[in-house]
Image 1: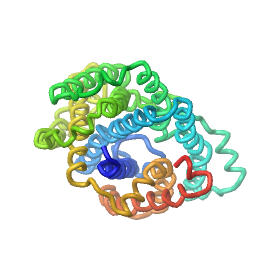
Image 2 (image 1 turned 45 degrees about the vertical axis):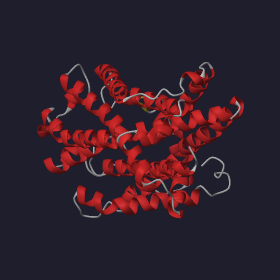
Image 3 (image 1 turned 180 degrees about the vertical axis):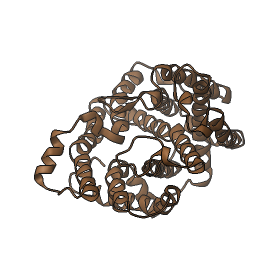
Image 4 (image 1 turned 90 degrees about the vertical axis):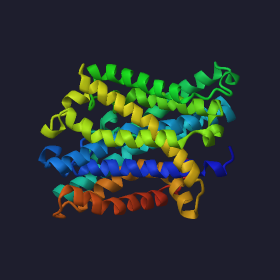
Length: 377
């Protein structure tokens, strides 16, 4: 595949980074999930805003990070195939390890101190900065960098997998629709089993890793590697959008019905989050099937409709990684500064969505050009 045909991947990266920002912004205004600053609690919302935010979070969680892992697996396998192993591992350590340390020991403390200054008028000074440093717990400070940490762990495992596997065994082996759906069902069942003990919301420290979603992440990472090794991306034009798009739309339409069936009207959806329940099984199947279908749909849509870049999209794509790293700092400070705006959560989320996205990308575009950051971001 030529570099020009990978323009659609750049545009998908922009989309996924935007989805991450919107997801964290929605948590700020009442959606379920863990975040640094929450202005509204889900229990404070009426039925319609609560339902809207829960379904928005469910859709985003179902596919966005899995899609990131798929792309990461693809490009990691590509790098392994082209670089000497020592060079690859060194570059991984720099490009993944340094941003993790930067986030834990600089970005996160600055963000917390800035929030305290805005929300509680606590001075931004050296003593308070040292105080925050004394409270640092590596896993808790990772925040969204758990994604980068897991990539750092999976990358050497992929090296081993590729080196002990004959690439020719992958050539020409493109899975059909039935195989893909079967894989989604398999991951659904494995996810359901994990959630019997570790329901949604369970976090493994010190990696800040969400165990209820980990099977999807690992599967998608190695699926991305498989796509590269089997040259499956070359066959993308032959994949039927008419098959995957209706499935994706149908699963989105089903979600509100599923929400109310598992107890959404009463505000209690705990049975769907984990445990040995039919609700958890059904939701696990919906989630993983939706992930596979929307990933296929978006790959095809962007390949057919958005397979070119402009100067703006090239800049946005180049800044996507930096935006992921720095967006918590920008988002928390920006929303804290606007906490006095007297609007209901959905309206506030709608009004601030575009300005927040723009600000995150602009700040990241500037910061990634600073000396010392150019090589890693």
